[in-house]
Image 1 (spheres, helix red, strand yellow):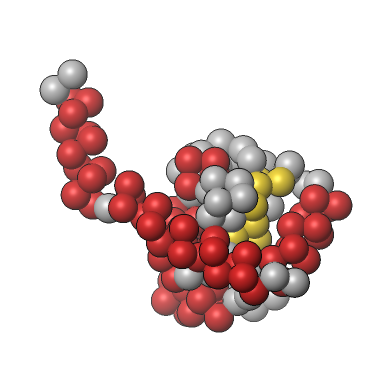
Image 2: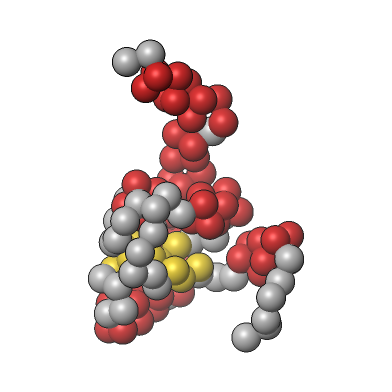
Length: 115
């Protein structure tokens, strides 16, 4: 454990990682998942809260049950053992980022206001 890191240093560690794992029992819309997709690091996270809005299981990452050690281990090993799968997830993840662009989010907010 490295202790408290600055935002930029944290992002550098995520970018350098082979897999990013977020084992969380509660999330709204996880900005760290969006940032991780942008950085091009394959993702394993839990199927709770807003995580499935960002990570589509088997398309741009892997979703597992919260605190399910067997599923976490299998998902991590699956990505570590298949560079092709990890590459596919990274490419798909970067394509999905358009729905989180500032322009799209502002347009969506305006649409809700005008509804």
